[in-house]
Length: 356
Image 1 (spheres, rainbow, N blue to C red):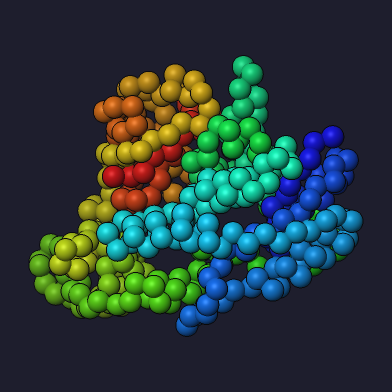
Image 2: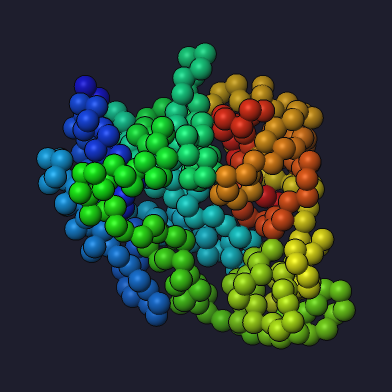
């Protein structure tokens, strides 16, 4: 029987993933990964203690071992430093994508590679075998599908990955948890960076990068509309949090050198849409993926976590950079985010690159 490590968060998804493995006859070892900061800051709202209590409850209920592993140093050196440096240089990074590759399937595997054959998580994703090769594919629940966040993992990492929730919808998972009286069924879903929470993101960034007052300028009239506290708090396509009257206003571009945020007025103005998306540092997951996205091939893609696929044509400049020509204009294309390429039937994940 395979030795399985299940990464558990204290939420409903990973707890039901543990239950599914047990019902299939496995006895996974549960791991809760600690990655949060050692010190507090204004707005810090970590639920780690409650998370661990939930993990202990699940472990006791299912008669499984639970270990708490501290990967704080690895996370901060490999993920968060990159995130902060990207922000200060005007990019919009995605730490969750990096966390999966570098921490959950990276640093964790480095520590326990000799002890476990499989690393399971509560992600909504799937792994299939086709022509003797493993492929990352979308989950049954297209709304909750999380392949976007997993699209940067390597083939070696995919080969050890297991996603017990592949064939469940979120509602089915919640109902299973309720049926078994799991207290995790009542917990709110976490949003944003996992140890911060969506509502406290700006407070965290301010604690790390500080503030620097700058102008908010109408890109069409060059009029100064207001002031901001640092370009790193804003991303292309952003509408909320600008503090401007007479809107809606959208962030169109950022002048990093002069700390200026340019905006345009209107409901999703034309300036925030693009049809050409340039990318770099593209990496495939499964060998032979490149055969499914030759130059001028029709593909589907995503530039953010969304159930919606967009059709486009891929054009290559070299082995790991190129551009996607979208069939329809895309809103909020932000440098530093990932573009994830799927096959022509919106199933297999072929790879991901960084939007340039």
